[in-house]
Image 1: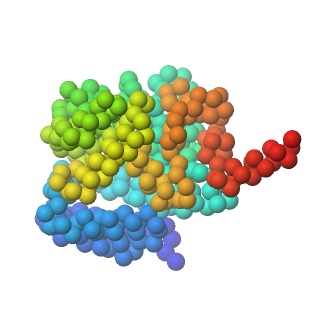
Image 2 (image 1 turned 180 degrees about the vertical axis):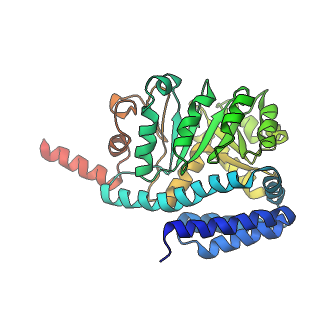
Image 3 (image 1 turned 90 degrees about the vertical axis):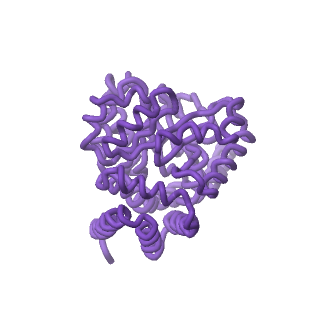
Length: 352
């Protein structure tokens, strides 16, 4: 059996060659990559992902070919490779296997990705806090982290540097993309930056593109703004920034019905293949990936005050606060498997 290090090296070698080929012929190069990946895929997530990619790329008029050309010509290949391998191999292969093993043995759900709204106060005053969260997260099989960073974006980069095997998505405002930030970001290959839609979006994205970075744009919508999103006007407004991904997030005012309607639009856009970017709903697509990786669905994040957020809402109980309790302890309490929930109830009744 090929060990994981050798297997990763072989995959990286093939992908590097394919990226060079894509520059000259994006259509042939990306099809060859997807076909090869599907032939060697064994896990549920990888097989489903590459089958979907193969189906989409069978359309010779797909706008995704323009996206592929844009990626190959404008993004530093080593950064693209590192970020992609950290998500695809570390996260959705090795990490996913670890997640399934722990879930089966321990009876609680583990998210494939962790969402963190970073507290600048904690980052400065308790420098060991966020590294401890990531250390525990990786031990559970979590290798992908979505960091929503207010204030000084540079302050979070030492944390990213400390975990080179993880993939980080940094959600920032356009004004945070400064020359000083880009200079400090330069050596980090395990990062994708997402710029909030707004006045400084295009300027920030031009700077990221000039630096050879993989980047996205993002925005949130309220109940009242959902119609604007579904009309296509939101998507049209971010196209000039030429992102690889566009992320949508519902705010707390949105009903489940509204979110479902927006997600139906998101999936229709992806299937339609008319835009040279990949539109995603942060919450619902995270849940979809989690459902494929392991049994059950699980979305977990923490606010700036440490409060727990799941796909079922915000929980402000002290026992769910990441500043006061370990991640595993919180997951055991708030994301038990159905069988574990039933067993817990039975034990409580017996105790009574």
